[in-house]
Length: 361
Image (cartoon, rainbow, N blue to C red):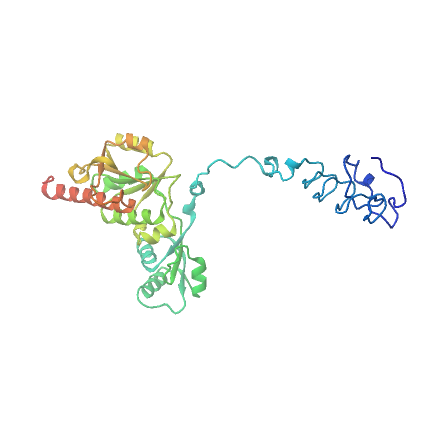
């Protein structure tokens, strides 16, 4: 229906804005318009139909904007297109792909250089670790804190007394015990350095290799056990593994200061290299033989997998043999740190017997 030129055109005080300012009109019923020139009995201006529409030249009763169909909420859309999803071209490609939750470890999380807790800080000072400054909670100057302060002054280190709130804000472990040290970055070793360390001690190499251990506490626990059991070094992958963080250091109770850790790109290639250096590769897996029935007295690398997945298929294929921890309970598996501790200490036991008695009896 053509628009009739009547009083109320653009520029006049009375009447709504005309459609020639918004584009061509929409064809179709105009039974409920409220613009000027209304027609129905209850209209509020001339040339207007219906009672409830709220915009010029509209269709149905529910439209809320110009030139729409009954349910549309944007100009010139069909009813079925009334509420479209956000288009991908506005937000980038679809995000249905699953992301690697451990990619952040590729960004060198080992750059975190805080040492938290009395024992870890004390061991760092004893080991000669390079420390920038030590934060001490105000009023804490007894016991091991006093020893830390004395050693720090002897080494001419900067000591800052701060409020507990400051330490709480710095802390990552949330268990700083009134002292936090800012230290140099943890050093990662090469595999060759670990093998040379064993050679210098005149011992058969003993290495623990961790496949996708992602829990800070597990890694810290394994480092602590390994240091006590005479392990020469630990190998972790660069991806899908926790790095040497303050939580790891705290859980290790200072053992991290003495245990060489190597970070490698490919575990399988590392196993091949160790085999060429004369090491036997033993993997912890439930399909293996009972661990204490195997001879593990020679140069050896023990592979421990994650709790959920265990050792990866390719890595398992590179093992010379597998061992298991017998279990009679209803629980299907042990914590990775506990499993590593049990087998590590049996290797330690076997090696001790061999050195004392000339063999295992």
